[in-house]
Length: 157
Ligand SMILES: [Zn+2]
Image: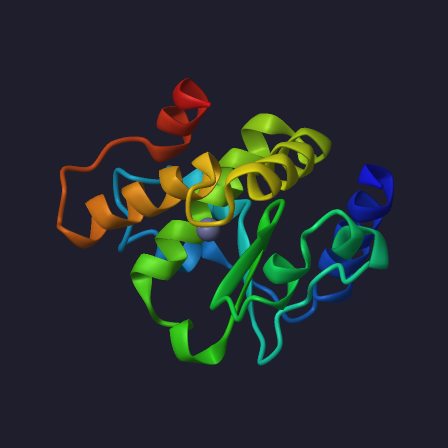
């Protein structure tokens, strides 16, 4: 299952490579939160319908609600997908970049395994990987003092 999802993610990110935009353009908005080199290796795609791995096996594992959730954005490794209505919402970008940092620190297979386990056991809203992202995007939205987010993520996972 992990292998199948990993392949789907690689395929999906490859498919959207021509449309993706570099997060480098967010540099001025996220000064001292995200290092330039980190932003330079992260991407986003604006798209009406977010791509999701809709495998029957995932629904059998109880992840149907998550798959069907009308999320504004979703992150796969170093690329996140956003619905047009949040394309310029910095807080949403900030949130998805936390996930990019989580994927980077954990590695693809471990991120997927952990995220699935969290959703299955406590649900989306209480999933620790999500709570970390929401807490950090909240800090940013309140004009909180900047700190190195990828480093924070690495120290708190
Ligand atoms: Zn999230």
